Length: 168
Image (cartoon, rainbow, N blue to C red; front, top):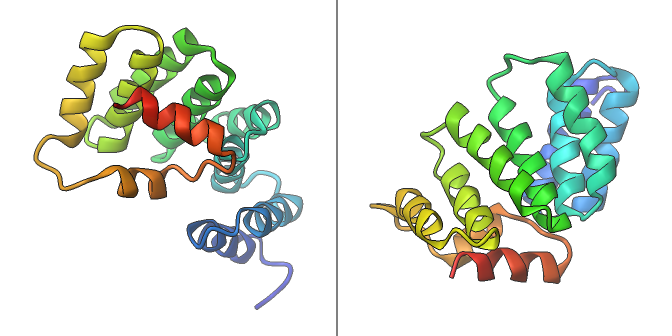
């Protein structure tokens, strides 16, 4: 393991986030960006983890950095999705819907984009559209609320609770 390898830090950070070690994951991604500031994937992943940590303003900077560095990246939908989650956390539901729609338009095949759109639409008060999006997200899939929770690692329980409430 070469301590100067930005990709190794990025990979470790991603693995740590999957293991639920959010603070250690954030530190690894920060290290990756210190070594290679142009690493769009590291900036986008750091933005995602900061969003789920409730650090939405800080997250926005890294998400925009990722988008600027690689505007046609295959992960662009994930970064836009992170912006939607940040807006959801902040209670800016109209903006959350806008970003969730954009993420879904870029990757309509990703069920979790439809799931996020459903939560954002529900929180914004558009229940018929939320139900339609939720049906598209879960249609034919064996996902349950536990799987949804694992895929949305909110650090603060109140954010997770509000997200899950918007889906029920």
